[in-house]
Length: 348
Image (cartoon, rainbow, N blue to C red):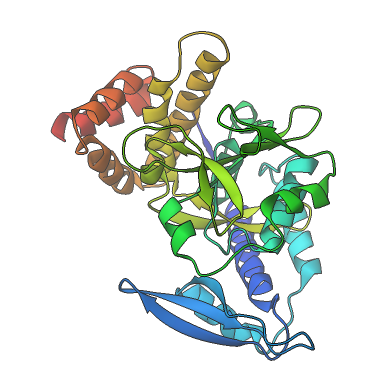
């Protein structure tokens, strides 16, 4: 598949939008708030203490990992105001330049989740909605058929959810209902009071996912920081190991977390082998491989093949089962991405 690189002005504008969204996130705090850095397991994280209100002093809450960008944003938050009009103008220019945008409902849901702090609590968008963001992140034009979706997959590592000293207020379900009161929990087979999916009439779904701990169980897991249940999935820990910030081109723009494109590509190779060969499952398997092949070609074109090769080697070295799944899925790719994957597997 021949991919087209986006004009440099579009790539620059996308990077500018991410910077503007980071600033907006940092400024979304009351005047007088203070920031404190904590070291946990050798890594630094920022926490925010909001000023006292008539109801008392709010508890300190998690603000995000320590990065140069976040430190800059924190400094700006003390002196500047976010320019929403600038962000909207950039977003319009990016859509006009060919970057994919979510449908109206998905965009509204993602914006509501971002405003409530879901991504601050290390939640990650996975699936096709995440795939849409790779056009701007990699600077390539993605085929329209590969970016269409009718649902939103949201994941959070269980260990992170349990360790965070912060809780989403209001709950995730209440946030969804604020966007559309028609959202309702879909009861699981395990209990009518346990839901890992929230749906509305018309077929739109929000599926909550988390990492699988130990042997495959399938039983839903409570994510304490997001106040929701989630379905544990095999191989999800591999996908969530390296996440990055991306700009979702919703109405006002939203700063979200997505997997790195390298891990997304390799993860799709693996999960495509878990699906059945008939019906909707077969269609999803084909889509997995299409998206993986596109990203592999894009990463090679952008000279990020060494990063991709490193992730492929890591997956292959996790055992014979992983390597076998990679080989089987690689055989179904188009010639260019297939040749690259098979060359790496041959030496892994």
